[in-house]
Image (cartoon, rainbow, N blue to C red; front, side, top):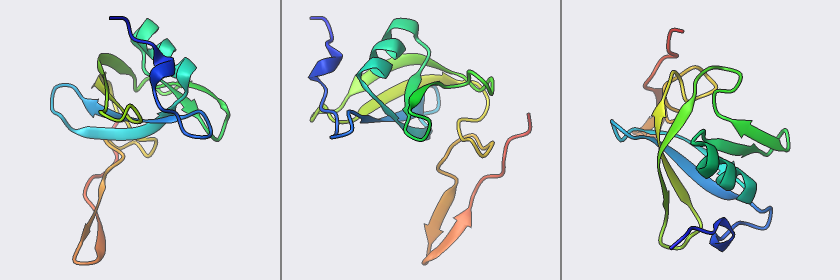
Length: 120
């Protein structure tokens, strides 16, 4: 059975959330958006491609930073409205220079930064 990206449930802006997870450690790295073309490009090339809402253009992870995401597995949730991309991450996944975008914990009502930026 071949996969048809148009069977996914995109929001009113034509986007679907995509969660990036490290394929080896299981660490959740980031969340970004894909449109139907970004899904197709990701599956065709193996280079994870997102849709930048601010720039209104495709964003191939690592194209300018060198912090790439190589696709290992592409999964669709049960409602077909969210994606999980398992990746081999090179360098930082977060634009802040941290390994993951999820570096802030909330404990006892206080925010705690749990991770410093990576050294390049």
